[in-house]
Image 1: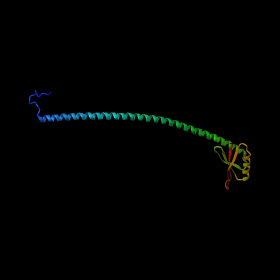
Image 2: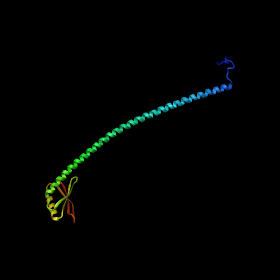
Image 3: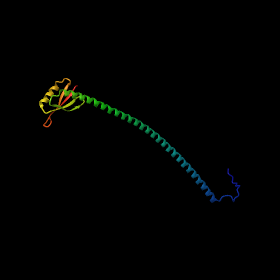
Image 4: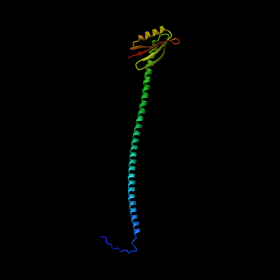
Length: 177
């Protein structure tokens, strides 16, 4: 119930144009306040989302750092294994060299006059020894002598070659297996 009684003197009553302007300013202020709350809400949500992204980025970064540390540890253990393999290879080569020296010393005992050992190679199951002679008769005697050895299960003729400068070259393969 509104009453039409106005207790203010009529000189204080605003004019119609001033009242319209005041009403427009009030509406404009209300719209500005609503826009401010919308912008503040949008800013708050944006800050929250950016914070979440930063947290997830930090978590993924720490996870990647942990994986990198684990890979570094694996790399170090692989380097240690590689060093061990190199040491094992050197020991095996020393063992192979000893076997080759043993075979060469056995062959030097059965060498006939005029025959020399040119080279030797130790493969997986067979030792290859190359003999050189300028005379075929000496080479024949050597092959007969080696054939009479009972230490080797298989003696294989791998190469028989003749060159005028070096003479006869015979490569024999010795296997105890």
